Structure formats: structure tokens, C-alpha cells
Length: 274
Image (cartoon, one colour):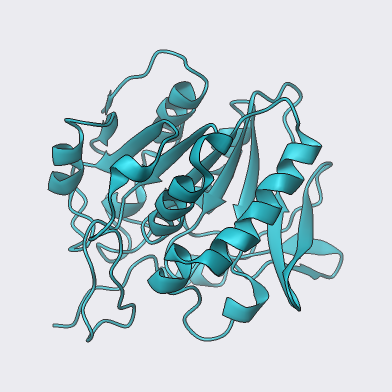
């Protein structure tokens, strides 16, 4: 049996064809010129009436969500845990920006782990963070990644230092995937989390069955960093490394995001979510 795929976009049949239309006030696609001839796009969700923080969300897999305008609507792939949970952030007064892969990483697989860990990714996301600081100068910016998106959030968090308000890593890619995988990469297997100088939070489902994201690795790190442990949810409707399983906090999205936002806003946190 081959290495499991992470955060794939096929999902299950009823969801794989779903796309999201967004016309509500305040929602837009923002494209920024970063590197030469390489635009970096992100989706800005509806801005809450009383925003208290900004979250930049990094989806898993190759990080490509297909942001586009189509027939007067904004459309993108909605299945990823963070993408489908965006309203949970907005409803809790967090401005939510969802990153797409930059234009030169759109073809094929998407962003590799090497790209996520490298300087070009930092250049692109620096432009996004700067744009968000201009739009919301009084608010702290948090980097939030899930699955392979945790590679981006962690690596960028280390590079930004204290210029960001915090980093949240969910269903983190603690272990590398092998050469036979359709998504090979080193993940965070060699990453030193102490290099992140901003506040750092982990969130992980206790029942995560994905081989590259075991809960046991998160539990070991809880001796140094806060960890939100999630239990329960809905029966899986995808593979163990895909979004509609414990790996994607399936059926526990609102409760998980609520505690993440509580941590971001320095409110009391329930570190065990049942």
C-alpha cells in the first residue's frame, strides 16, 4: 500500500464538485505583485463588524484552492478544514484571509515542502501580511496552517519573528512522506519549533490516523507548547489523511475553531475539546 495522500481535493463525490460562490459585502480576491511576474492571490472573507484579529489560513495538500472570478462570483475549492471553517473565524470577530498558491506554483502538485520552507514563499506571504497590516493596522496577524499548510505557517512564523501575533499549527505534518507518495516531502520532521518567537499553539485530533500527522508527536510537544486536543466528531467520509476525517476535525470544526480563537484573543481556552 502506498503512502497516504494528504488533504487531497477529490474528497467524496458529493463534495468534489462543489465550489463556493461569494458575493457578500467585504469578500474579495486580492492579487499582489510579489516576485517578478508572480502574483500572489488571497481571498478576504466577509469582515466582521468588530474585528479583533487577523488570521492568514494556509490549506493543506499543495495549497492550491483555485481562486477565481466566474460568472460574477468568487469561486474556490472549499473542502479543506480551514477553508470550510472560515465562517467560524469570522463569526468570532477574526478577519480571515485564505492563501492560494502563487501563480508559479499552480501547475501540477502545487507548493512543495521545499517551497513552503524557502525564501520565495516568505517573499510572497510578506506582501500578503503587509497588505493586511495596511487594511487592519490595529490588529495582530496570526498564521494558521493545517496538515501540509502547517509547514508554511511554522517556517514563515520563524522568519517573521515577533512581527506577527502568533502561529497556530493544526493536524501538523510532523513526519516526512516517502518517495513513493504522490506528495513526498520532509514536512516538519527537521523543524525546530523553538525558532518561532511569536506565541505558538498546536491543535490536533486525538484520533488522527494519518501516518504523517500522529497525535503522539503533538502530545510530546505539549510539554513545551500549548496543545488543544480534540476528540469525537462525525464518522469519516474520506481517507485518514484527507479533510473529511479526524485529520480534518470532521464534525468538530466549530468547537475546534472556537478554542483556537479564544487562544488568539487571550480568552480562557478549553484545551480538551470533546
